[in-house]
Image 1 (cartoon, one colour):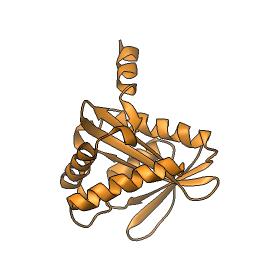
Image 2: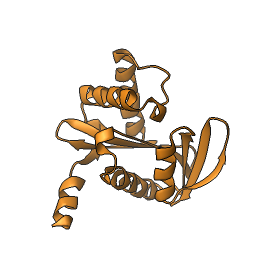
Image 3: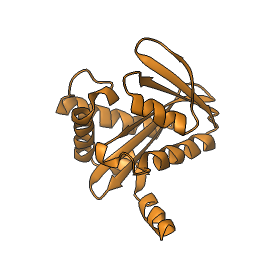
Image 4: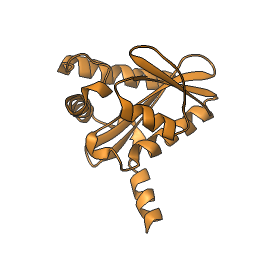
Length: 162
C-alpha cells in the first residue's frame, strides 16, 4: 500500500510553470507568515513583487539555468525547490515548505527529484545557504547528505556532491 501512496504523491511533482501565479503568491505569503526565518524577505512581498518573482523564475527555467519544481496537493502548493546554476558544475539549491507539508517526506522527495534533474544537467555540486536561525532547514539538508562547510554570523553553507 505504501508504494501506491508514494506513486500517487509523486505524480503531484511538477515544474513551477504548471503552477498558477495566484497559487504561487499564496504559497510564498503563507510560508512567510508561518516562518519568516525560512524566507529571504525582510517583509511580506507585495503582489507586484510576487508576480515579478514568479515571472523571473519562469524565464530562468526557460533559459535552462534553473530547475524549479513544486509539489502540489490539488491547487495548493506545499513545497518548492529551486536549483540555480552558478557555473558549469556548481549550483545553488533552495527549498521552501509550507508548515502543513513538514514532516511528510514531501521536501525530501522534491529535493531528490531536483537533484536528479541537476545531475542530468551535469551539475556535480550543490550548495545550500541557510539562515542560521533556520535550524530545521539546516538539519533537513544534513539529513539529505549535505555537509556544513562554513558559516558566518547569519548563514550556514552546506554542500553536496551529486
